[in-house]
Length: 226
Image (cartoon, rainbow, N blue to C red):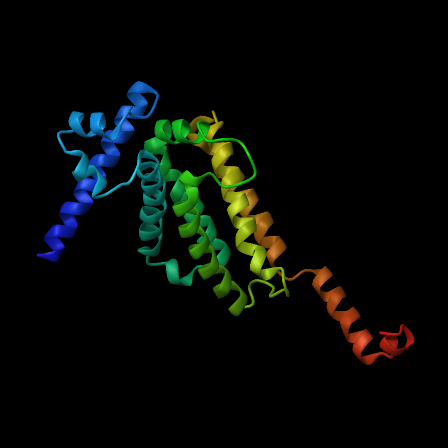
């Protein structure tokens, strides 16, 4: 009984989302009211509010759904468990934007109406939560396997760097006019590789470690009054 109810709820959520997408792409704006939207889609206001509290919540659900579906698809791949953290990040980015192609008109509409600024628009909040949970997961795996460098204070910021990279690619894709969005694929590859290169151990890490060693064991600490 619970599974039947769950399938019904999922179907209703999908119906509301599809009806909302159709409306905003046809009219170029949100419905004037939940009452009008519900009536046009042969449901009551009460039925709508069983699933969403506002039209903004519908958009949040659509964006979060893109991430949820992408994660389900990439984690179902047989090769997933053998991937490095870098490869898992690339897989998510490629998968997400491949999925988004089928909803490009909605994505362009939704993104272009967001206020400009340095804070994450509320419509992307659930998407960001899902993305950061995923980023945390693969970054921890990367640090545990020594693929990535465990830097004091900075390691916790790795997921923020990945989110910034994601937002950059999203805005790049919106303005990409290349055939098959091949320029976006190139931006993903170059961006993720550069970002993960920064996460990995580098000569700078070795220099800091050497300096720390000298301070602690080379008599420099006493000479410098540390």
